[in-house]
Image (cartoon, rainbow, N blue to C red; front, side):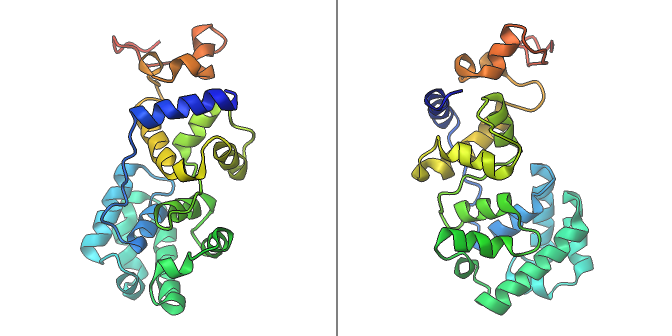
Length: 234
């Protein structure tokens, strides 16, 4: 898609897939913990691990820092990579207590690039995790790219390369700063409900007329299995 077409497609996604803000009623540290746990796992397993942690430990810097690694691992086991995540979260909690009195907002204070660098200097926080925390906690105009948004970028042919930074910049060029948080959430919902990895629902997709991926399927340029109303995939 060219930029004009992709902006039209984005407008459709924002209208048809209203953003579902999962951070409501969560404090900043719990958002950070949730994003770290969500790495390389499913939403369902991330929620199970987060609830385990909430029930058995409590999700505050003080409680996480004071809990033994083995107990953190036990809580995080459903989410996978639990040995690494337990160590990361314990270290993150201790760092916040030692340097910022347990207040994540003090770590991510402006300017944006300084806040991003401060997050990415910590073990367990890469560019995507940092961008999610900055957008959802700090209301910065980052454009986090998860697996759903990456897949959509490829199907819409706005993916300029394989690097995270390339793809997030491509999205930023199409989404004004004040709309990126909403667009991030709406695109994730669109990717989960319609533009799925397996059996995408191209035949009922509101973006279908503009989508290069569907056009190539329709014209036989590529072979891909898509969802059919009869429930028979072809």
